[in-house]
Every structure is written in C-alpha cells, then in structure tokens.
Image 1 (cartoon, rainbow, N blue to C red):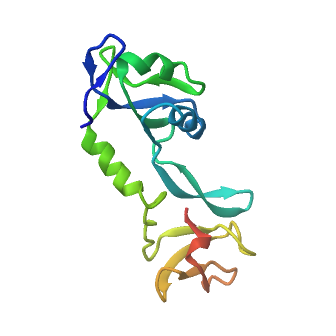
Image 2 (cartoon, helix red, strand yellow):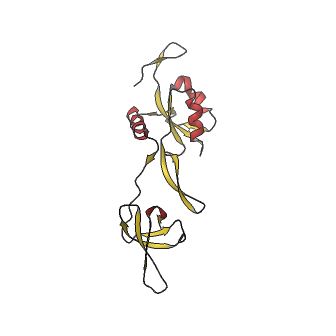
Image 3 (cartoon, rainbow, N blue to C red):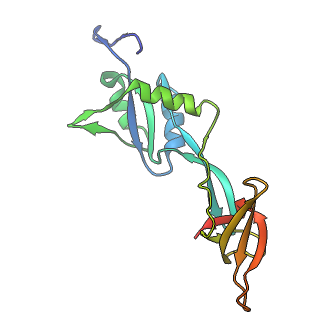
Length: 178
C-alpha cells in the first residue's frame, strides 16, 4: 500500500481506493474531473456489441456502469469528490466510505492495461434459436446449425414455405441469440 501522507493537521493518514457511484452515463466525465486532482482514478471498460439503428456495432462501455474507483484520502478528499459534477456518492457501509481491497484494484488495473476488456462471445450450439441482425435477411429468425472454418462463419437453417429448411452461410457477427 502507499506510504502515509501528512494531512493539514500534521497527522498521517493513508490513501485508499474507494468506489464512486456516478450518475448514469457520467463515468467518463467524472473520471476526467477527478483525474485532474486525485492521485489515481480507474474506470475499467469493456468492448460490447450494441444495436444502433439496424446494425450491430462494437463500442466501449464501463465494465461497472455508474461506478469507478478512486484513490483518495478520506479526510482531505471526500467532500470534494462528493460534490464533483456527476457523482452520486462514495459507496458506504454503516455510514462510512467502504475501502476497496488493494488486490482487487491491482487485478483490475492489470486486466485493463491493454485497453478495454473483451469478453469471449457465448458460443452458439446446434439448435439454438437465433435472429439475423444485419444484411438482407435482417430480423429473420433461424436455427443455428454449425460453425464453419472457425468462429467467423456459421451455417444456419431458415424455415421455408415448403417446410424444407434452407441452409444459409453468414458471418457469425450477424447473429444474435433469440
């Protein structure tokens, strides 16, 4: 842990990590504001696929929506953190701000060192109901058949009027579980 720091009264106190609850969508703004004067602020992020209009796109979102981690000295910094625009509160237990254990923060920092986390997509299994998210067959429902040449291409079965399923090959990224 960090060395003790002298506060205004001349006594020593420790900086610790705390969980800051933010308003929805304000995590980045709060990170930027607090990062200007606190020793360290951590906003772990995650790559996610979201639907925008008619397309699935990859974007970056907070790993813990409405929360970020801040290293601060409670006696000196708590009031200023609480009144930062976009902050709801520092997470408390029994009225006192809760310290986040240092190993948890270190593990998050290690995992996020290379940029936003990427969680592996849940693999599809034969027979899973899927919906086509893009292209000319958008919004058609189908049944997953199999992966072809790795996880990039898949075969699905579409229902037809004749009752005989039609096999279609698509990029895996164009499917979502139904």
